[in-house]
Each structure stands twice: as structure tokens, then as C-alpha cells.
Image (cartoon, rainbow, N blue to C red; front, top):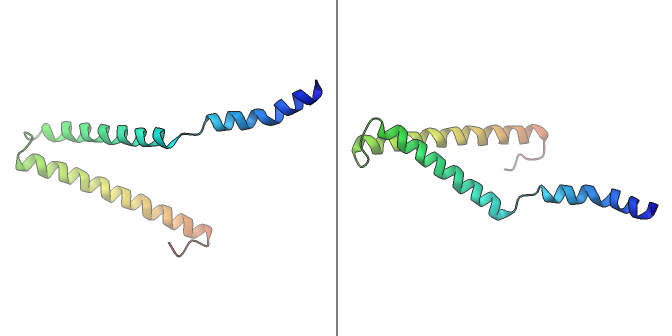
Amino acid sequence: MVRKALILAVLLPFGVGLSGCASREDIQAERVAQQAAVEVEDDSRCQAGAAPGTAEYDACRQGLANQRNKKAEIIYQKQRAFDRTLGGLDDL
């Protein structure tokens, strides 16, 4: 009885830990959902100023995409700087 309880106590954290892991499909589905949400938000922001298909609408969408890319680049550079602070990652 004690042996079974000990085995259960040892294996239970592994079972709980593995249940929290996301699969590749879950991660991909989350990325697709986030991208779709961004597209809808960008579309609604740009439709407020211009009709879809016009030059103003296209410029608005391109501007939002550029802002997002700049922000992503800044986040990436900050992560690299932090990794370099930890040491050993200068060759990235």
C-alpha cells in the first residue's frame, strides 16, 4: 500500500506536467487565430478611413504592417541583447 502511494506521488507531477504541454497543432492553431484577429482589426481600422481596394486603404494596411514589423524587430533585438547578457550567445 505504501509502495503504491509512493509510486503515485512520484508519477503524479509528471502526468500533470505533461497535460499542460501544447502540441504543435495547438500552437499553430493559436498562431492562425492571432493572425486572423490582427487581420480583422487592421481591416476595421483601415475601413474607417477608406474603402477596401483604394490606395488609401492599401497604404493604411501597409502602414499597420510596417508598425507591427518594427515592433517585432525591437522585441527580437531586446531578446538577443538579454541572451548576450546571459553569456555565450554572441554568435547568434
